[in-house]
Amino acid sequence: MAGRERHLNPCRPGCVSLAMTTSLQRPTLLLLAALAALSLAGFAASRGGAAEPTAGASAAKTVTIVSFAFKPGTLKVKRGARVAFSNTSNTTHTATKAGSFDTKGIAPGKSKTIQFNKRGTFAYHCKIHPFMKGKIVVE
Ligand SMILES: [Cu+2]
Image 1 (cartoon, protein in one colour):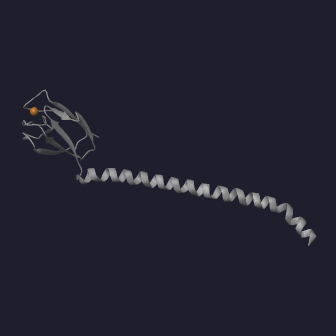
Image 2 (image 1 turned 90 degrees about the vertical axis):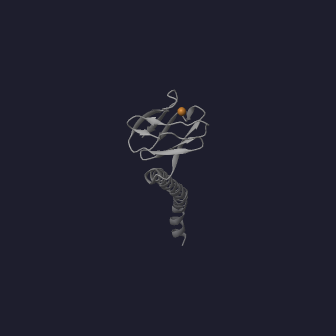
Image 3 (image 1 turned 60 degrees about the vertical axis):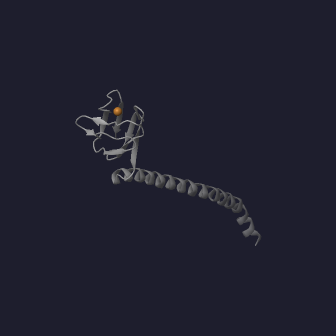
């Protein structure tokens, strides 16, 4: 009896400290693993989410024509994105890049949508007011 206790006693602090370290480390490791998994999943989801609308071409970006300017002046989009040129001014305008795209005349209050399927920088202008300039950067 006494011999057994003496034999067990030295073990107990060791066992307890071992149990304590593992019980401390295990949740931390699990938590880290869970966080890593979550951030990976979130990353994958955000990547997938970002890629899908452009492929589906459902979400159009907008360039607003305000008086005699394109806003934003430079718009970055993903390849395949649709860009709506929305004319909020009281004059007809175009967004034109010779050889690439041409909205033709956009009457006040109207908009025209162009899909950008090629990568590159498209510097366009208004055919009616050539000083009106903008850029679409397709990535
Ligand atoms: Cu114009």
